[in-house]
Image 1 (spheres, rainbow, N blue to C red):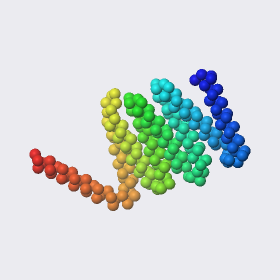
Image 2 (image 1 turned 180 degrees about the horizontal axis):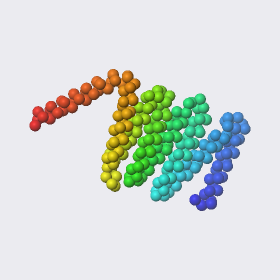
Image 3 (image 1 turned 120 degrees about the vertical axis):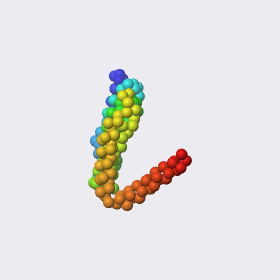
Image 4 (image 1 turned 90 degrees about the vertical axis):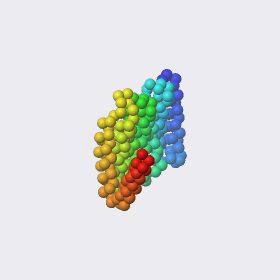
Length: 214
């Protein structure tokens, strides 16, 4: 970035800072510092994202870019809804970082490893979001199932070295653990057995029709 561009950025930041502190002095906002940090993190995040658009080879720039934008979003949420328990803020921050790894994989399909932090962080974002209407046991089930789905996706996607079939092992283990935790809730048992019977019945019918036509 040239010196002229840096002067534009610093000039805009100083103008925004002056406007925020002026609004605080007039009683329009309670505190200018939080808004100022949100602007600083937001501008820095947008700078990294813009760098990626200018040079697609800098794939890594999307990670700090969306992380900083997520941090700016957390500050804005804490200012707008200070009474919240942080569930939304945690979901926004973790989700932003997880989304950055999704974009890394979309840009570089040979970077299959990016799917693991992407799935883990997006799962944690869902868990953070669910804390307001789920118990700890339900959140634990969601965590294990989400991680299992993540490794399942890793096992299915093609890579230059072939499919990562090893990922099926942690996928099955984590998925089963999540299902067992979910079944421990008790209420799901009323739905799991009927659905299982229906699936088995459909399978038997399909097999019966297939054998009848042969």
